Amino acid sequence: MILQKEFNESGYKDILVGKIASEYGIDLADIFELDQKPEELLSIFISEQRDELFFILDGDLMEINYLCDSWDDRIRVFTIINRNSKAIHKLMYNIVQLIVYSGNTPDKSREGNLLISRKIIIKGDMTKKNQIIIDDDEVIELPFHMIPVDAFAPDAEQMEQLSQLLPKDESLLELMEKKQKKVNRKEKEGVLDKSFEVQDYEKIREWLEK
Image 1 (cartoon, rainbow, N blue to C red):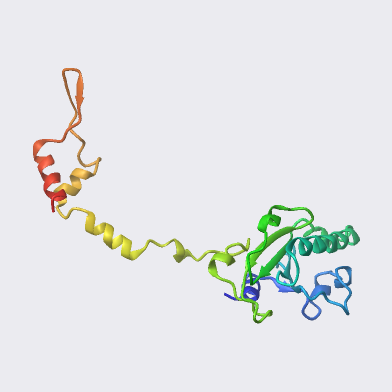
Image 2 (image 1 turned 180 degrees about the horizontal axis):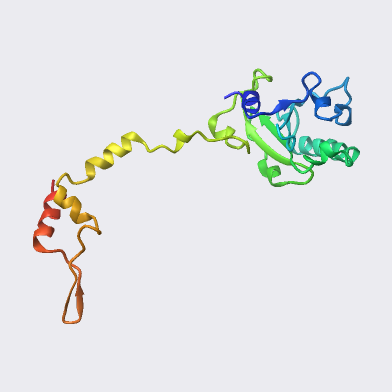
């Protein structure tokens, strides 16, 4: 799955492209020097409702803690400068650092640090950084990702195996349905007898012995 495509199909737009940032009331100069875009910054996606901002960062270029801290500093300055902006105020508390790495798994403890921004760390193939490939078990980390309905569909093979375990005798099936036939309950000398009738027991025994 292509990470950038996942964002686009969910209604997000990359404000680093063209004049999209200005259309959303965002001045990129408040985040970085326009003639010196940070190498680790790959994209900045804003939601269609303008209430979420995702900074896509290359986690292979520097140590994870330094990366998180440096971008928290940038984001802090950005929010302070724009504290009176209605456009920025709407997304101020929904800013995410989405850090993608391709090598060894970094320290993910920073994901629990919600100071300034939320952190999500996922693995991806960044051979083409404008088309980052991520596995299905990684894409579910994206808050907006919708799991396909068919993912919850019952396994056809397992359903078939289960059906083979059920008795074919309709009378036995009825016996197994509590609403159709209840276990015989008799009290003998103060002891509650929950045994089946003899003929019912024989049906069950024959089925189990098959």
